[in-house]
Image (cartoon, rainbow, N blue to C red):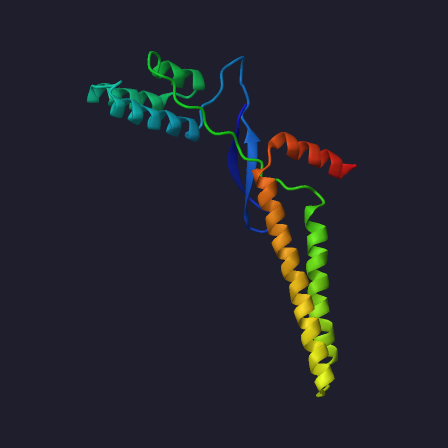
Amino acid sequence: MSPYREYRRGPFGGVAEIRVERRTVTGTVTRAGREDRDRYLNHLSFLYATGHVTDKEELEGMRDAVLAVRTLAGLEAVLEGFPPPPLPPPPRDMAIPENFLPKFLLRAYIGVFTAVLPTVALSHEHGAAANVFTAFFLVLGMSITLNAVVHMWMTSVIWENMGSEERRERRRNDRR
């Protein structure tokens, strides 16, 4: 079963993307979705361009049949005798570990407070030492915040490029 996307209204008016699994109705009958029809229509265009389908009326008849069919078995029956279409790419697992965000947000907050608190506390002072102190903590806080943001971004990139089995293993370890 391959997942497909469904969009639903959220509680505050936003739109949420939900991944839903296709369900088999009875036995092996599975309803064909828009993505499946698009994949078969693209494959029909490929078959026409490569010369497998040479008659324009035959192509239009097959196109109409693909648009009218409701099941995956029906789609396969339309292209019977031709090379099968390529399989759709597997869905990418973009989920990140549960404990990913809190530690980076904590580091970013520490960085912001390191920059802001001494600056606010020393804002009424006009001496050279106060200016140096303020500049030091401002740069320190900004570097901590920037480090947290870059580290969070790099972790998400690494997580995205990681294999799904390794992701599952890391999630299991995170829950322990």
